[in-house]
Image 1: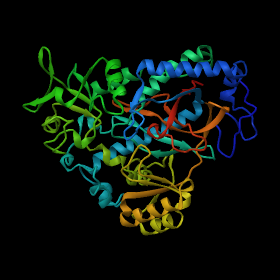
Image 2: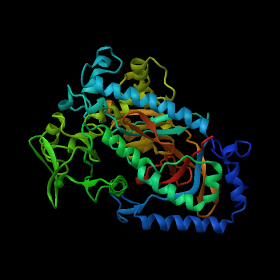
Image 3: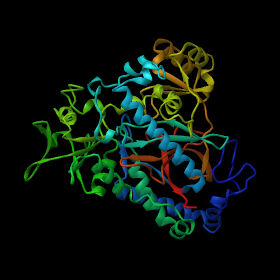
Image 4: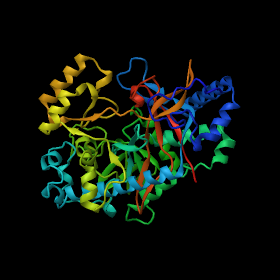
Length: 476
């Protein structure tokens, strides 16, 4: 397939330099492209799409009039990351997760970071994700954030920056796993030739971590799902199947004598560990949201009594707040005495007068986000928005400044992507590696690369029309 018409543009392109030279880790892939016709590439893409549907790799999009079941479009051009680059990402993510776990433990117990004014007290204690019932608690093995999906972006300078931390119920890992199986079939010889690190053992590692946080020798593990209408239900059922554990919803569980039981055809069976895929406040209507129909009445008391382990721990979401995110570099220095290996995207806190005024004056150049929104919602991309939208967000910020942060509009690196009419063209991507925290902190050597399929778009979220790529991390 010809790449002569490929346009690098002003962004950092992961396959080509500004001068149009192929980067060394993509050289073998470029050779393969040169031997592959456009028709063959189109056929491979069509086959990938059909395989996704056959595998049931769909997600639900709410508020979509065109039907709720969609596939997360998998582009057949992989993103390739050299080993040295990955090592830095791995070290930076481990450092960050370790510090964030210490922070969560601290704010629910001694609150030293608040007393020492490392983070504003009202920001944490006033957060809707700070759960008062968790005060004084330490979860099993002292681990709060067992599974994390951290979003990174790469700017024009070629450096990676942390965009946000996802410590509640990070999704997408099943797409990383299934995408690998599909793309391996497309390029079997190249995959082995390059030496791509495997990700297929993730379910084994996830199960091992879940078993580790129980105090039982052979704990019974389950995945707690909100049900079939949840946008990530495919992932919930997929992970339960791959781990060989039960997939349960709230109606399948009950609490007796502060112990949690599954209702089975053979009667009640105690369950010891839950990988929960529902939000904190829906876990237990007796402790949190009284109208929740998704959780299990009394499960929090069973958790407090030490009779069940829950991953991620209830209360973890307070470290997921986009306003708290701005303070993570300070938290790393405070708890670990180290400088951050990976930097944040520069962030303006609208709660602070100087920052707020800067945002109001430069909103056309900034990305503005709600601190508690996700999935690309509650967001303004200044350069891509109208004057009316700028005015609307100025008013929102003025009326509730604590609810908003702003960041410079990063360029986001590009990776060649197969388009319908223009062949291979650069499309913007981000990166979501997955980190497991059990006996050790482990970064899975692969990631979900999300890609903005629309030309020029910076929004990679699947709910907003984004797709994905397989991410190849090389051994050496």
